[in-house]
Length: 106
Image 1: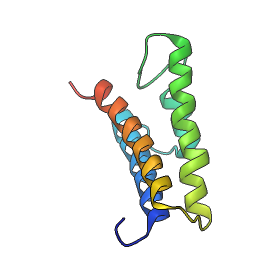
Image 2: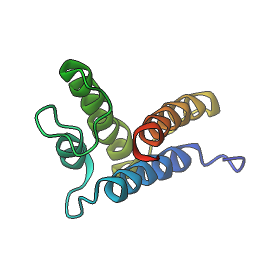
Image 3: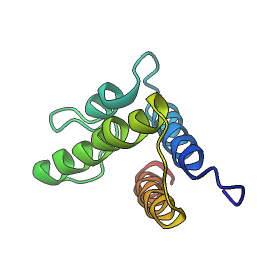
């Protein structure tokens, strides 16, 4: 990121998140929001982050929204980000990774 490629750093982080969820869930063939909606679904979650159904839906929305609003945005068009904005999106990605680590590692 030191080279000024802030948008690319954000995009690569969210692509990595998608890959991480795919591997942790064993759900190949799905991508983006579709992947997140199936993996974190309220009725039959492959990865359960919360025992509370409404919280599980909220986490599903966070992961799905990250794919639609952040990963897709940075993957389909040129996005100019300031360093601080990039750091904020990277921090959010880090939080999503950390949640996964808590529930997918023994």
